[in-house]
Amino acid sequence: MSSERPSLSRRDALKWFAGSAAGTAALPAVAAKNETEPAPAYPIGRSPIFDPDFMKPVVFPWDKLLTAEEMKTTAALADLILPKDANGPAATEVGAHDFINEWVSAPYPKHYEDRETVRGGLAWLNTESFRRFEKRFDEVTIAEQSQIADDICSSSKVKPEHKVGAIFFSKFRSLTLSGYYTHSSNWKQLGYLGNVTMAGAYPGVPDEIIKKLGLEDVA
Image (cartoon, rainbow, N blue to C red; front, side, top):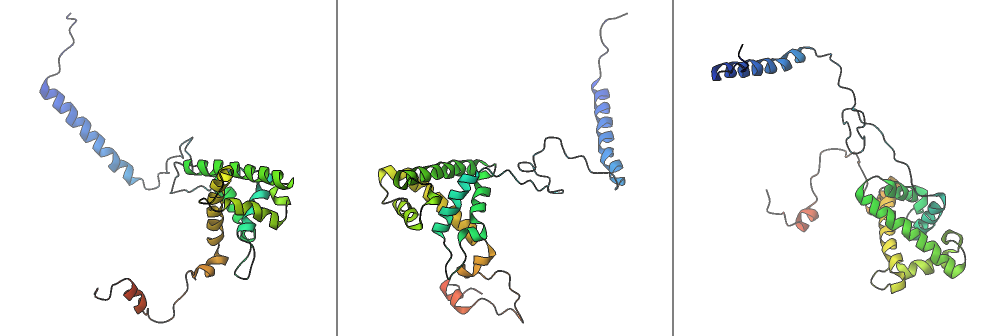
């Protein structure tokens, strides 16, 4: 008996490939007939944050990382930046401090950077407050808080020893404003009314806006 394996002719090989392709192509048609076939199971280990299933969205709130002491300082500085006045509520009344906590706790690369900046800045703020007034920032008076804030609110005029505080303040102020003005109670301050039903026919774009954009000759 020969030990050599039988060779496969080119014609037989082509027939074999053609048959395999035809069988594979027929599979989707068979599966499509069964419209009640259940959807595949959610993959084990699939992240609802980085690999979400948009057909079955999952609410996945991440843990808030700022400590209770950090939140006290966050709230104090937020209200110093945006206190309650005739134009609107204080920052903490609309949850701007909670927004900051949510933001810096988010599990995304950009947020990691902001987390380091904010947490380091909060620590710097309390250290500076202790150095000047022997109390935490949230325990001193508004006037004393303002003294510290005034030294770090302008990056172009900041002293070298306050540079870290100025970098922190710039980021913190931006986050405070974001949390504050995305709250619906403050939209009117920006001149934004939201979705308002318009009675009657659409009047079109006001002439002053068309003129300002230089679109008078556009059909």
